[in-house]
Image (cartoon, rainbow, N blue to C red; front, top):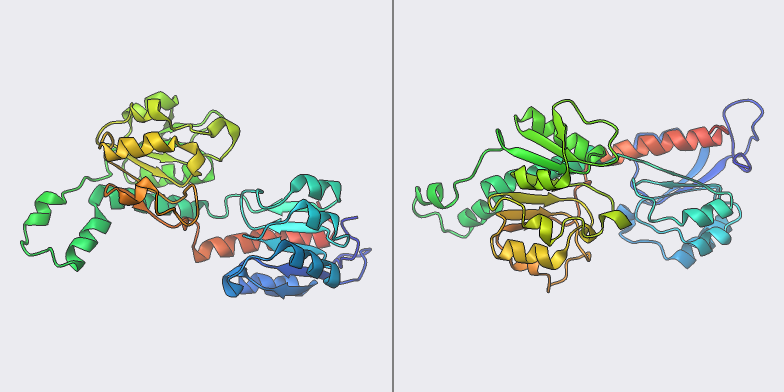
Length: 331
């Protein structure tokens, strides 16, 4: 079934070109590799600036008899899968499979592959940047200079004095690809690193595993990297926030559902914790009514933790390898 309508490079496989539609951003050199074995149509959503209408996409896949669909931001619902008999493979250029109805794909004999950890380094470095920005008040310092407030050369030495990361304690909640990468980077910066993850088989050398309460109480920076699943809903709640040091900072690239939002806003507005930085929110874009927008001890970035050129290169290589294996009839 996986070889029907596809051309393989090995003997004994049908000599028909696979029809591939790529809607994700993709590295040019990987597109060239795919074009050696497939008919490739490339329309990155970064170029078109739009997400495909599900009905229009369904009609197009049927008309063009597409074998392989690659997405990053587009959604693949059950109705599309039920109505596209030629589709054989869906590639998701993400770690999460939330954009695809995997049960419907299974029911229709469609293979689904993803690109786990494709943006781990990018997100980890972004979180490190947020930690440094909180520790040294970099965004506030930039505004201070731009707005013409720097009249007394010595004044910011007093009002904007920060802290160094070296010698501080980082608590990593969730020691997966992103959390593990951040832990290694911060160890190299002479930070003490604690981690909580009940599913981690092992920790990187130098990382101390502990329970969540201990991590929260002892950390100067708490960085949260857990998936949005039932057991992580409001994981960081009012009780845990109350255990944080008043000098501690919170950083997160996790879904907003991981936090008890009202308790988080109160802890920040009442200065019971020093500050926080977030890259993911309840809505995209952030609602103008969000209490986080009004707080001067909070940094906000528009869900761009993984937005690097290297992330695209990485998921392009991973996806190309999977498509080539599929075309050749390999698992």
